[in-house]
Length: 359
Ligand code: ZN
Image 1 (cartoon, rainbow, N blue to C red):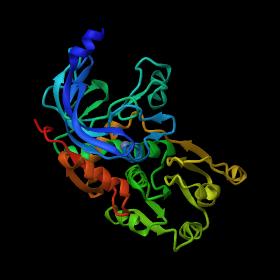
Image 2: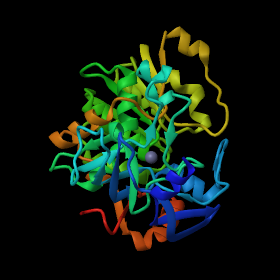
Image 3: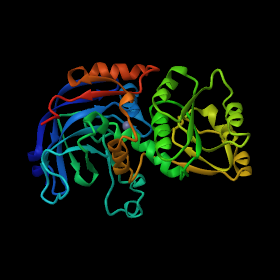
Image 4: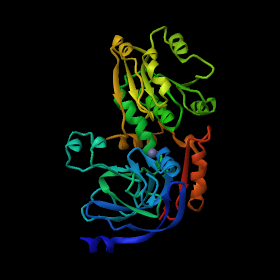
Protein backbone atom coordinates (compact mmCIF):
# COMPACT_ATOMS: atom_id res chain seq x y z
CA UNK A 1 0.00 0.00 0.00
CA UNK A 2 2.70 2.44 1.04
CA UNK A 3 4.86 1.52 -1.94
CA UNK A 4 1.96 2.02 -4.32
CA UNK A 5 1.29 5.51 -2.97
CA UNK A 6 4.88 6.59 -3.43
CA UNK A 7 4.97 5.21 -6.95
CA UNK A 8 1.93 7.27 -8.05
CA UNK A 9 3.29 10.61 -6.86
CA UNK A 10 5.08 13.00 -9.17
CA UNK A 11 6.64 16.42 -8.78
CA UNK A 12 4.16 19.12 -9.81
CA UNK A 13 4.62 22.87 -9.96
CA UNK A 14 2.23 24.38 -7.40
CA UNK A 15 1.44 27.39 -5.27
CA UNK A 16 2.33 26.20 -1.78
CA UNK A 17 1.37 27.83 1.50
CA UNK A 18 4.49 26.97 3.52
CA UNK A 19 3.07 28.53 6.66
CA UNK A 20 1.08 31.61 7.61
CA UNK A 21 1.90 34.52 5.25
CA UNK A 22 4.53 32.57 3.35
CA UNK A 23 3.74 31.37 -0.16
CA UNK A 24 6.09 29.84 -2.68
CA UNK A 25 5.86 28.61 -6.25
CA UNK A 26 7.73 25.34 -6.27
CA UNK A 27 7.60 21.67 -7.10
CA UNK A 28 5.77 19.46 -4.66
CA UNK A 29 5.07 15.73 -4.70
CA UNK A 30 1.44 15.12 -5.67
CA UNK A 31 -0.47 12.05 -6.79
CA UNK A 32 -1.43 12.36 -10.46
CA UNK A 33 -2.41 8.74 -11.19
CA UNK A 34 -6.19 8.30 -11.03
CA UNK A 35 -7.78 5.42 -9.14
CA UNK A 36 -10.48 3.38 -10.90
CA UNK A 37 -13.23 5.93 -10.19
CA UNK A 38 -11.05 9.04 -10.59
CA UNK A 39 -9.71 11.30 -13.33
CA UNK A 40 -6.58 13.44 -13.59
CA UNK A 41 -7.19 17.03 -14.63
CA UNK A 42 -4.68 19.53 -16.05
CA UNK A 43 -5.76 22.70 -14.30
CA UNK A 44 -6.47 25.77 -16.45
CA UNK A 45 -8.06 28.37 -14.15
CA UNK A 46 -8.34 28.71 -10.38
CA UNK A 47 -10.32 31.36 -8.50
CA UNK A 48 -9.01 32.72 -5.21
CA UNK A 49 -11.57 32.26 -2.43
CA UNK A 50 -11.90 34.08 0.88
CA UNK A 51 -10.95 30.85 2.64
CA UNK A 52 -7.67 30.58 0.67
CA UNK A 53 -6.85 34.15 1.68
CA UNK A 54 -7.78 33.42 5.28
CA UNK A 55 -5.35 30.45 5.44
CA UNK A 56 -2.68 32.65 3.84
CA UNK A 57 -3.22 35.58 6.24
CA UNK A 58 -4.08 33.73 9.47
CA UNK A 59 -2.81 30.16 8.99
CA UNK A 60 -6.06 28.62 10.19
CA UNK A 61 -9.84 28.65 9.99
CA UNK A 62 -11.40 27.50 13.25
CA UNK A 63 -10.04 24.02 14.02
CA UNK A 64 -8.30 23.67 10.62
CA UNK A 65 -4.68 24.80 11.03
CA UNK A 66 -1.91 24.80 8.43
CA UNK A 67 0.77 22.70 10.16
CA UNK A 68 2.54 21.49 7.02
CA UNK A 69 3.04 22.96 3.53
CA UNK A 70 -0.30 22.91 1.68
CA UNK A 71 -1.31 23.66 -1.91
CA UNK A 72 -4.07 26.29 -1.93
CA UNK A 73 -7.14 26.65 -4.18
CA UNK A 74 -10.49 24.91 -4.57
CA UNK A 75 -12.31 26.77 -7.38
CA UNK A 76 -11.05 25.19 -10.57
CA UNK A 77 -11.63 24.19 -14.17
CA UNK A 78 -9.38 22.31 -16.55
CA UNK A 79 -8.98 19.43 -19.00
CA UNK A 80 -9.14 15.70 -18.33
CA UNK A 81 -5.79 14.09 -19.12
CA UNK A 82 -6.16 10.63 -17.54
CA UNK A 83 -9.25 8.53 -16.88
CA UNK A 84 -9.65 5.74 -14.31
CA UNK A 85 -10.70 2.27 -15.53
CA UNK A 86 -14.28 2.45 -14.21
CA UNK A 87 -15.12 6.01 -15.28
CA UNK A 88 -17.91 6.09 -17.86
CA UNK A 89 -18.93 9.70 -18.38
CA UNK A 90 -15.58 11.42 -18.95
CA UNK A 91 -12.87 11.09 -21.60
CA UNK A 92 -9.41 12.50 -22.17
CA UNK A 93 -9.72 16.04 -23.54
CA UNK A 94 -13.02 16.85 -21.82
CA UNK A 95 -13.21 20.38 -20.41
CA UNK A 96 -14.46 20.16 -16.84
CA UNK A 97 -14.96 21.91 -13.53
CA UNK A 98 -14.73 20.21 -10.18
CA UNK A 99 -16.77 20.14 -7.02
CA UNK A 100 -14.02 20.40 -4.40
CA UNK A 101 -15.65 18.44 -1.55
CA UNK A 102 -15.87 14.67 -1.90
CA UNK A 103 -17.89 12.79 0.73
CA UNK A 104 -17.81 9.11 1.56
CA UNK A 105 -20.21 7.92 -1.12
CA UNK A 106 -22.03 5.30 0.93
CA UNK A 107 -22.20 7.37 4.11
CA UNK A 108 -25.49 8.02 5.83
CA UNK A 109 -25.40 11.71 4.82
CA UNK A 110 -24.64 10.86 1.20
CA UNK A 111 -27.51 8.38 1.07
CA UNK A 112 -29.80 11.13 2.40
CA UNK A 113 -28.67 13.53 -0.35
CA UNK A 114 -27.01 15.89 2.11
CA UNK A 115 -23.45 14.88 1.27
CA UNK A 116 -22.16 18.42 1.91
CA UNK A 117 -22.62 17.84 5.64
CA UNK A 118 -21.10 14.37 5.64
CA UNK A 119 -18.54 14.46 8.47
CA UNK A 120 -16.19 12.49 6.20
CA UNK A 121 -16.05 15.12 3.40
CA UNK A 122 -12.56 15.67 2.02
CA UNK A 123 -12.33 19.25 0.71
CA UNK A 124 -9.52 20.80 -1.33
CA UNK A 125 -7.22 23.21 0.49
CA UNK A 126 -8.61 22.43 3.92
CA UNK A 127 -5.64 21.27 6.00
CA UNK A 128 -4.14 18.73 5.60
CA UNK A 129 -5.68 18.22 2.12
CA UNK A 130 -3.87 19.83 -0.84
CA UNK A 131 -5.85 22.15 -3.12
CA UNK A 132 -5.80 22.56 -6.89
CA UNK A 133 -3.36 25.44 -7.54
CA UNK A 134 -1.08 22.96 -9.22
CA UNK A 135 -0.42 21.70 -12.73
CA UNK A 136 -2.49 18.52 -12.33
CA UNK A 137 -4.86 17.05 -9.76
CA UNK A 138 -6.60 13.73 -9.28
CA UNK A 139 -10.30 14.00 -8.51
CA UNK A 140 -13.32 11.73 -8.10
CA UNK A 141 -15.06 11.46 -11.49
CA UNK A 142 -18.54 11.78 -9.90
CA UNK A 143 -17.57 15.26 -8.67
CA UNK A 144 -16.10 16.32 -12.02
CA UNK A 145 -18.53 18.00 -14.43
CA UNK A 146 -18.24 18.49 -18.18
CA UNK A 147 -18.37 22.10 -19.40
CA UNK A 148 -20.42 22.81 -22.54
CA UNK A 149 -18.32 24.46 -25.29
CA UNK A 150 -19.84 27.90 -24.68
CA UNK A 151 -18.75 27.91 -21.01
CA UNK A 152 -15.16 29.11 -20.62
CA UNK A 153 -12.64 27.72 -18.12
CA UNK A 154 -12.84 30.99 -16.28
CA UNK A 155 -16.63 30.65 -15.94
CA UNK A 156 -16.13 27.01 -14.99
CA UNK A 157 -13.93 28.10 -12.09
CA UNK A 158 -16.76 30.41 -10.94
CA UNK A 159 -19.23 27.55 -10.60
CA UNK A 160 -17.94 26.77 -7.09
CA UNK A 161 -18.74 30.15 -5.48
CA UNK A 162 -21.95 30.41 -7.56
CA UNK A 163 -22.99 27.00 -6.21
CA UNK A 164 -23.26 28.55 -2.74
CA UNK A 165 -25.72 31.12 -4.11
CA UNK A 166 -27.61 28.28 -5.81
CA UNK A 167 -27.77 26.34 -2.54
CA UNK A 168 -29.16 29.45 -0.82
CA UNK A 169 -31.83 29.86 -3.52
CA UNK A 170 -32.78 26.18 -3.24
CA UNK A 171 -32.98 26.37 0.56
CA UNK A 172 -35.22 29.47 0.31
CA UNK A 173 -37.73 27.45 -1.76
CA UNK A 174 -38.27 30.51 -3.95
CA UNK A 175 -41.61 31.04 -5.69
CA UNK A 176 -41.92 32.83 -9.04
CA UNK A 177 -42.12 36.56 -8.45
CA UNK A 178 -40.74 36.50 -4.91
CA UNK A 179 -38.89 39.53 -3.60
CA UNK A 180 -35.72 39.17 -1.57
CA UNK A 181 -33.13 41.13 0.33
CA UNK A 182 -29.49 40.10 0.27
CA UNK A 183 -27.52 41.59 3.16
CA UNK A 184 -23.83 41.93 2.26
CA UNK A 185 -22.54 42.49 -1.29
CA UNK A 186 -19.31 40.50 -1.05
CA UNK A 187 -18.63 37.72 -3.54
CA UNK A 188 -21.08 35.32 -1.92
CA UNK A 189 -23.75 38.02 -1.53
CA UNK A 190 -23.56 38.88 -5.24
CA UNK A 191 -23.59 35.18 -6.18
CA UNK A 192 -26.67 34.67 -3.99
CA UNK A 193 -28.45 37.68 -5.50
CA UNK A 194 -27.76 36.43 -9.04
CA UNK A 195 -28.98 32.94 -8.12
CA UNK A 196 -32.12 34.40 -6.50
CA UNK A 197 -33.00 36.34 -9.66
CA UNK A 198 -32.27 33.32 -11.86
CA UNK A 199 -34.30 31.19 -9.44
CA UNK A 200 -37.47 33.23 -9.94
CA UNK A 201 -37.29 36.40 -7.87
CA UNK A 202 -38.82 39.49 -9.47
CA UNK A 203 -36.64 41.86 -7.49
CA UNK A 204 -33.67 41.38 -5.19
CA UNK A 205 -32.51 44.26 -3.00
CA UNK A 206 -28.82 44.12 -2.12
CA UNK A 207 -27.55 46.10 0.85
CA UNK A 208 -24.02 46.85 1.98
CA UNK A 209 -22.27 49.53 4.01
CA UNK A 210 -19.63 49.84 1.26
CA UNK A 211 -21.19 51.64 -1.72
CA UNK A 212 -18.45 50.48 -4.11
CA UNK A 213 -19.42 46.83 -3.58
CA UNK A 214 -22.94 47.60 -4.77
CA UNK A 215 -21.70 48.67 -8.22
CA UNK A 216 -21.84 45.07 -9.44
CA UNK A 217 -25.66 45.17 -9.22
CA UNK A 218 -25.74 47.35 -12.35
CA UNK A 219 -24.89 44.33 -14.54
CA UNK A 220 -27.88 42.31 -13.38
CA UNK A 221 -31.47 43.39 -14.16
CA UNK A 222 -33.66 42.93 -11.09
CA UNK A 223 -30.94 43.71 -8.55
CA UNK A 224 -31.57 46.92 -6.60
CA UNK A 225 -28.71 48.37 -4.54
CA UNK A 226 -29.28 49.86 -1.08
CA UNK A 227 -26.41 51.75 0.53
CA UNK A 228 -27.02 50.89 4.17
CA UNK A 229 -24.62 53.57 5.39
CA UNK A 230 -26.74 56.37 3.96
CA UNK A 231 -30.15 54.72 4.02
CA UNK A 232 -32.32 52.88 6.58
CA UNK A 233 -32.70 49.45 4.96
CA UNK A 234 -35.80 48.50 6.92
CA UNK A 235 -37.61 51.76 6.06
CA UNK A 236 -36.71 51.38 2.38
CA UNK A 237 -37.88 47.74 2.25
CA UNK A 238 -41.16 48.60 3.97
CA UNK A 239 -41.72 51.54 1.63
CA UNK A 240 -41.04 49.38 -1.43
CA UNK A 241 -43.26 46.49 -0.29
CA UNK A 242 -46.29 48.42 1.03
CA UNK A 243 -45.31 47.70 4.66
CA UNK A 244 -45.34 43.95 4.03
CA UNK A 245 -41.65 42.97 3.80
CA UNK A 246 -39.72 40.79 1.36
CA UNK A 247 -40.44 37.08 1.00
CA UNK A 248 -36.86 36.07 1.75
CA UNK A 249 -33.84 37.60 3.47
CA UNK A 250 -30.46 36.11 2.59
CA UNK A 251 -27.96 37.00 5.31
CA UNK A 252 -24.60 37.06 3.49
CA UNK A 253 -22.59 39.55 5.56
CA UNK A 254 -21.76 37.53 8.66
CA UNK A 255 -21.70 40.91 10.45
CA UNK A 256 -22.85 40.47 14.06
CA UNK A 257 -24.79 43.73 14.19
CA UNK A 258 -27.14 42.61 11.42
CA UNK A 259 -28.62 39.53 13.07
CA UNK A 260 -30.82 41.06 15.77
CA UNK A 261 -32.98 42.92 13.22
CA UNK A 262 -33.36 40.29 10.49
CA UNK A 263 -37.08 39.76 11.15
CA UNK A 264 -37.77 43.44 10.42
CA UNK A 265 -37.30 42.95 6.67
CA UNK A 266 -39.34 39.79 6.15
CA UNK A 267 -43.06 39.43 5.50
CA UNK A 268 -45.14 37.26 7.83
CA UNK A 269 -44.52 33.60 6.97
CA UNK A 270 -41.38 34.48 5.01
CA UNK A 271 -37.93 33.01 5.26
CA UNK A 272 -34.44 33.88 6.51
CA UNK A 273 -31.52 32.04 4.89
CA UNK A 274 -28.22 32.17 6.78
CA UNK A 275 -25.37 32.12 4.26
CA UNK A 276 -22.66 34.32 5.82
CA UNK A 277 -20.59 32.92 8.66
CA UNK A 278 -20.16 35.26 11.63
CA UNK A 279 -16.85 35.01 13.48
CA UNK A 280 -18.59 35.08 16.88
CA UNK A 281 -21.92 33.77 18.21
CA UNK A 282 -24.75 36.17 17.30
CA UNK A 283 -27.92 37.49 18.91
CA UNK A 284 -31.23 36.73 17.20
CA UNK A 285 -34.56 38.30 18.21
CA UNK A 286 -36.35 34.98 18.35
CA UNK A 287 -39.69 36.39 19.46
CA UNK A 288 -39.72 38.76 16.47
CA UNK A 289 -39.02 35.73 14.27
CA UNK A 290 -41.74 33.65 15.99
CA UNK A 291 -44.29 36.45 15.82
CA UNK A 292 -44.10 36.27 12.01
CA UNK A 293 -43.67 32.46 11.94
CA UNK A 294 -40.55 32.87 9.82
CA UNK A 295 -38.81 29.82 8.41
CA UNK A 296 -35.05 29.71 8.99
CA UNK A 297 -32.62 27.89 6.72
CA UNK A 298 -28.86 27.47 6.82
CA UNK A 299 -26.31 26.95 4.07
CA UNK A 300 -23.03 25.05 4.30
CA UNK A 301 -21.34 24.82 0.89
CA UNK A 302 -23.75 23.01 -1.50
CA UNK A 303 -25.09 19.67 -2.67
CA UNK A 304 -26.62 18.62 -5.99
CA UNK A 305 -26.45 22.08 -7.58
CA UNK A 306 -23.37 21.94 -9.85
CA UNK A 307 -25.20 20.69 -12.95
CA UNK A 308 -27.95 23.27 -12.47
CA UNK A 309 -25.36 26.03 -12.07
CA UNK A 310 -23.54 24.96 -15.25
CA UNK A 311 -26.87 24.80 -17.13
CA UNK A 312 -27.70 28.36 -16.07
CA UNK A 313 -24.36 29.62 -17.37
CA UNK A 314 -24.58 27.59 -20.59
CA UNK A 315 -28.11 28.86 -21.34
CA UNK A 316 -27.04 32.49 -20.98
CA UNK A 317 -29.52 33.07 -18.12
CA UNK A 318 -26.61 33.64 -15.76
CA UNK A 319 -23.56 35.64 -16.82
CA UNK A 320 -20.78 35.51 -14.26
CA UNK A 321 -18.13 37.16 -16.45
CA UNK A 322 -18.59 40.67 -14.96
CA UNK A 323 -17.49 39.24 -11.59
CA UNK A 324 -13.92 38.54 -12.71
CA UNK A 325 -11.94 41.52 -11.41
CA UNK A 326 -8.53 40.43 -12.68
CA UNK A 327 -6.74 37.37 -14.02
CA UNK A 328 -3.10 36.70 -13.10
CA UNK A 329 -0.68 34.28 -14.71
CA UNK A 330 0.50 31.48 -12.44
CA UNK A 331 3.98 33.06 -12.23
CA UNK A 332 2.28 36.07 -10.59
CA UNK A 333 0.10 33.99 -8.27
CA UNK A 334 1.80 35.30 -5.12
CA UNK A 335 0.99 38.88 -6.22
CA UNK A 336 -2.56 37.68 -6.89
CA UNK A 337 -2.83 36.51 -3.27
CA UNK A 338 -1.35 39.74 -1.95
CA UNK A 339 -3.98 41.62 -3.98
CA UNK A 340 -6.76 39.35 -2.69
CA UNK A 341 -5.55 39.83 0.89
CA UNK A 342 -6.02 43.60 0.46
CA UNK A 343 -9.75 42.88 -0.02
CA UNK A 344 -10.25 45.90 -2.28
CA UNK A 345 -13.85 47.12 -2.29
CA UNK A 346 -14.16 46.86 -6.07
CA UNK A 347 -12.77 43.31 -6.31
CA UNK A 348 -15.17 40.40 -6.61
CA UNK A 349 -13.13 37.49 -7.96
CA UNK A 350 -9.45 37.20 -8.78
CA UNK A 351 -8.43 34.24 -10.90
CA UNK A 352 -5.14 32.56 -11.72
CA UNK A 353 -4.38 31.04 -15.12
CA UNK A 354 -2.23 27.93 -15.02
CA UNK A 355 0.36 27.42 -17.77
CA UNK A 356 -0.64 23.95 -18.96
CA UNK A 357 -4.43 23.82 -18.75
CA UNK A 358 -5.43 23.89 -22.39
CA UNK A 359 -4.04 20.57 -23.61
ZN1 ZN B 1 -14.68 29.13 -2.66
